[in-house]
Length: 319
Image 1 (cartoon, rainbow, N blue to C red):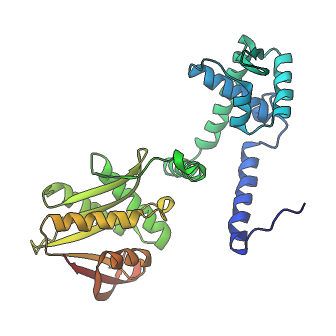
Image 2 (image 1 turned 90 degrees about the horizontal axis):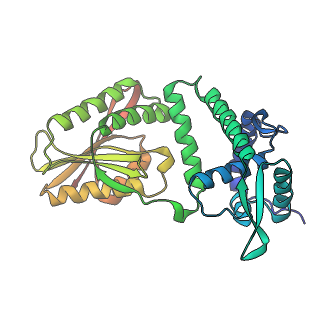
Image 3 (image 1 turned 135 degrees about the vertical axis):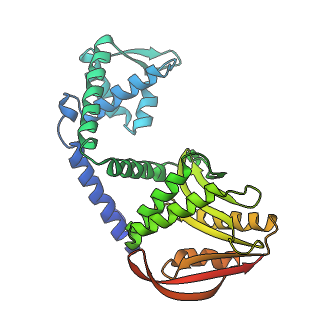
């Protein structure tokens, strides 16, 4: 039976996905007959890893069927692999008392030694790929891998995003990610990063907890976004929304809307009469969030900043 064709709008994403798979498979050498020159096939290596990992975690018993389900290996193919590993003296099998058709698996002493060598080779391979990269590139690569992993996990496995107050180390992240994201997406130079650094320094030096707040959006310890509410330097009854940022990998989750709403709600609770923000005309996605929250565009002015010709905008709302 012929496989159904992908929808037209999926053609480009599917092509990109398959291109990445081919590239990464080639990088890791997964099409080679044996992984990391170990003598084991990919499936054999994965099974040895699962047995070692579950044993180290203190599993009472490791059942063959569970390993097959975890790795997506059908029963017939799994049985053939286990027979090869058993014949090589790497694993031992004994019948599962509750199901004679199934088996409990154990790594033998020889199997543990073989796994240790396979694990060492795999770590050496990973180090060989990562060590030549600059620290920033290495961190970006790991973040991208984590993004892929999180995106493909079943939804129930994901933790919720929380909005928390700032703490030590957050301002450095705010500065670095603003500088990197706006350079990548809009080509802005380091003068924007310098502006963000001054805003963050002023916030920390003059922080008024009862009237000002920074929120960091976080999931499983990973920062995904931020926003600030600060008092206007010239008008005590006016709050300023500053430095809204959502990581590219976290967009589409409603996080920007949540950050803006939290900021506006806080300003109202503090007794501010109005709120204002300064942005640029090219930041269309942010404009939509501001309009939804009740802001209205009140002024525009052309300027040259951050290495680009821009149109600055002032947005305001009555609270």
